[in-house]
Each structure stands twice: as structure tokens, then as C-alpha cells.
Amino acid sequence: MLTIYFNIDEKGYVDGYSTTECYTEYNMNVNENHEVLSNPYIFKLIDGELIKDEEKQKAIIEESEKQRNQPTLEELNALAILELAEKLERGEG
Image (cartoon, rainbow, N blue to C red; front, side, top):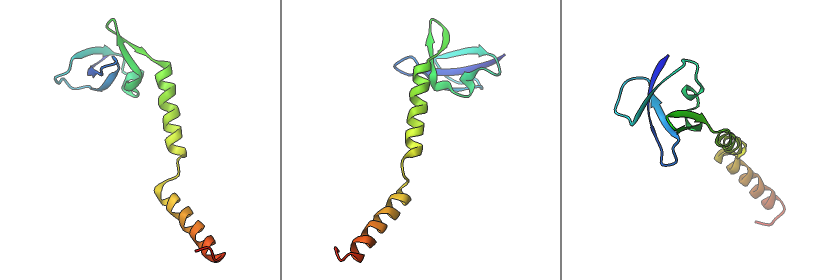
């Protein structure tokens, strides 16, 4: 067992944790392989228990994938340069 120290946000979700004693609202003993140690933000404190919110986890994954699929600033700049070069080549610039 491992003691974790944590706070919760205004919606009741774990807002990070520490394994060293510090000033937090809550502390709890969890198994050393508990998912809260690798993914704390999907757990909500309900009646003194950490409950995994599958919907929140799904939303976080979807947002992460959406961010990963967005072109980088470097890629956007390269596309803009290509478009400008094509316009100049056609005599539009």
C-alpha cells in the first residue's frame, strides 16, 4: 500500500497527488499499481472513495488525439509558403 496526498477541484476530481506528506485536503492508501498514480485526473472523490470516471477519461483521450492531429505552427508556415509560391508562379501575387 502507498499513501497519496491530494486535493480535489471544484467538480470533485483529483487535481494531482503526491506520495510525500504535504499540506493537502485529503490522503488515502492505495495499491502501488492503482491507476490514480498514472492517471489521477479521471478520478473523482465520492463518499471517501476514488471513483474512475470513464466518460472523463474518454474526453481527455479525444482531446489529446485532436491536439495531436492538429498541424504544428511549422507545418502551417510551410503550407502558407507553398500556397504563396504557387500564387506567385501563376502570376497572382
